[in-house]
Length: 351
Image (cartoon, rainbow, N blue to C red; front, side, top):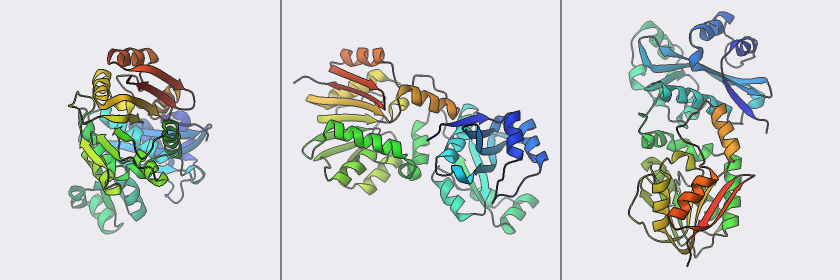
């Protein structure tokens, strides 16, 4: 697949945007696009695939409340749908909101499919806006039959709230690459029925879904996640799973001893490596392994974050030297690190 680049709306993007066929959306007057470029481009993003404009999102801040953003248009060209571009554009606006103390992102739509689409990303029906009385809202609600949707952004410190909001659509949003890399990882680790597995940052259950499909769901499987909503989704899909609502970024009491402790696709969300490795060391039995893996390499993940406008105070995947140092300090041995097709780190506890 060709790389997707998310950019701020610039003059070149404006010229391409105003000539874009946005059917079935109504074509806006050029003056509308110029107004967004002139006054609201900080909340507008465009998506490119090989220098071709593939989609865009136009949003603006409420002039009476800078903590509230409204999405005017989100559009992806027909030939580029199914590539996750809409999600990347929404994420870019969300990232802007989180970086600028925005509390809510709202939109309106008359399309039931759109309501379901936005629900995957945490948008819910906004009854306050739905009942707001002024000529514009009255017209959109009563004549156009619009539904008003809002995404409430958590405070910067509330990672749990962020993932709780995303839980409902998390599993359906997994990419083919994320699934295929997880399948490769579990084959490589040769997970068997008799094994015990601790799944850190389990989300809604990508690993158990693969294991169950193969008929090798471990005799002891425990899922850990910061988000109670993620774990609720996981339990509904896999009633046999045991779950723990814990923050692995803080030192925790031992959950038990396991043959495998796996942290898949979630390492960018952990900041306290010492706590992560201390918790892992308490959980790996002699002869067992602790594995950190990600569907993207370090370079690919950094490029992905740059493309969607995401910035972080720490490296998404720690350096080799950091991982080797902290793993040695916590008594792990026989480190293996690969960063070719996907990122893979594995250490053991000696028998």
